[in-house]
Image 1: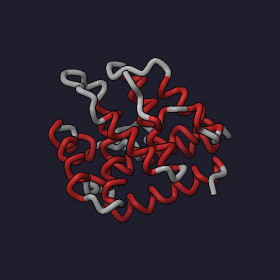
Image 2 (image 1 turned 90 degrees about the vertical axis):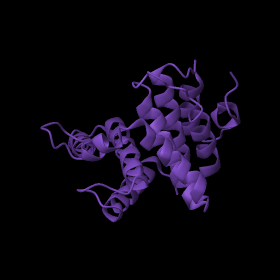
Image 3 (image 1 turned 45 degrees about the horizontal axis):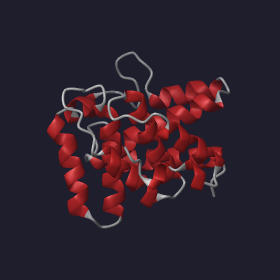
Image 4 (image 1 turned 120 degrees about the horizontal axis):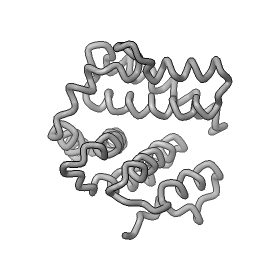
Length: 190
């Protein structure tokens, strides 16, 4: 299988992205959840570093995954489709962006996730934002980075699907920009 150029760590100058690309490319398989997670993470890291074209390339590649019957793989595809939609909307390619969202809706987990408390735990568990605060309190920089990325993914997904009862698009977009700013500051991205 040929991976897209966006996975090529040898042509990368940013050390953080070199590691993210190596993780995503190492033994990549469309049938391994960890492979899809690393690739989805790579797409978001590229986006965070202002590399929309490379992020889109990774998202389009992940969109080729046929996860039929393997719902353990769907979450990572869903995240990349949401990011792909965001990038395409930004590029004024609304029809293509809508096709990404249609694919998310076809699977049928949309309402379940919009009701869920992944951002702020509502079922007695800690959500992404709670986990970020916990890691900040514990001075766990790696944990903060990981939970911020999770929150960014969830917020992107929610925004693209029109928000939820508790998170309007405007509120989610504001939180997304805040999380982006914090993560950029942490990674010292200008």
